[in-house]
Image (cartoon, rainbow, N blue to C red; front, top):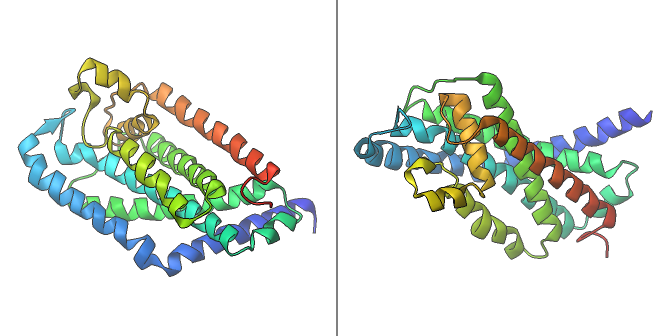
Length: 258
C-alpha cells in the first residue's frame, strides 16, 4: 500500500468511527438540539416574534432562523470532537493513533470531519424543522454552504483543542458553558447589532461568532450588519490559526504524551 492510500484509509477509518459513534446514540446527539430549536421557534419566533414585528426588513422569525441553524451547527460540531477525542485520551487508545504510521494532520482531519458530519446532520434537521414555521428562502446558495462548512470546521477545531487540554469531564464542559454559550447568544442570533448603542456595537465586533451569523444570514436572507468579505476573512484566519495550533499540540504531545 502506497503512502497516499495508507493516509486515506486512516482518515476514512476515523471518520466512519466518528459517524457511527454519534449515530448510534442519536437520541442524545441528534434529538435534543432538534427539540431545543423547536422550542426557540415556538417561543421566540411565534409568541415573542409576533409582538416584535420586523427586523432587518424581515419578520422576526425569518430573521432568527439563520442564527438558530448556525447555533446548532456550532454547538454540535464542537461537542462531537471535544467528547470523542477526550474519550480517546481517557480510554487510553490514543496510543494507537500515536504509533500509527500516519501524520498528525490525518488524525486532526479525521476528527474534524467527524465534527463537521454531526454539525451538518443536526443543521439539516434544524433546517427541516424551520420549514414548519417559516418559508425559508436562500439568497446565495454558495455563500450559505461556504459559511456553513467553514463555521463547522472552525468549531470542530475548537472542540479538538479543548479536548487536548481537558483532564476531566468538567474541563470538557467549562468552555462550552462559560465561553461558547455567551458568545453564541451575544453573536447577533436574536437581534441586529444596529439596535445597540454605539459603544456596545463596537464591543460586539470583537465577537467572532457575530461575523459567522451575519455571513450566514446574508447567504439566506441577503441582509447583514457586517461586511461579508471581512466576515469570510476573519473566519478563514481563525481556521488557519487553530489548524496550526492544533498540529503543534499534537506534535508536542500536549495533554497526550506522559
